[in-house]
Image 1 (cartoon, helix red, strand yellow):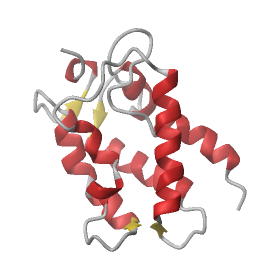
Image 2 (tube, rainbow, N blue to C red):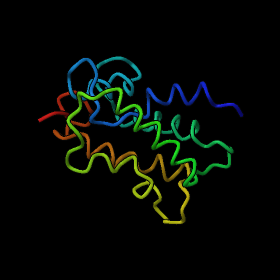
Image 3 (cartoon, one colour):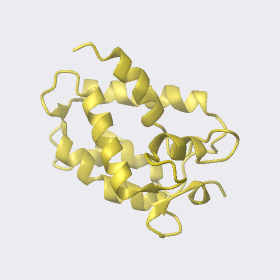
Image 4 (cartoon, rainbow, N blue to C red):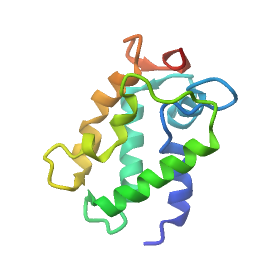
Length: 142
């Protein structure tokens, strides 16, 4: 399957949580992950988006992200971070929620769709600094 258009789209959704847009930390993340445009990302929105990301990078459609496929995901995230430099970096370990080591729950060297989406709740909690159940730009920055 030719996934070039999907990879380009994934650059918009596979963002670093700390990358900001328009000068405000977290706005790039919120813009990319907020499906209904209300300025806040819910756990349901984050879980759905992570499923989309998984489908984008599962090149061979086997239901798993291999180390090679995960490498392409990491590269897309790194490129996206370069394009949105106003973020000040990750705090409190929030970056780890997208790393293979965090998402490979059974440590078999592959990340299944179930592992990737199940890990959303923990990753989401890392970003929701004020614990209000949604992620907004207020959860980023100092």
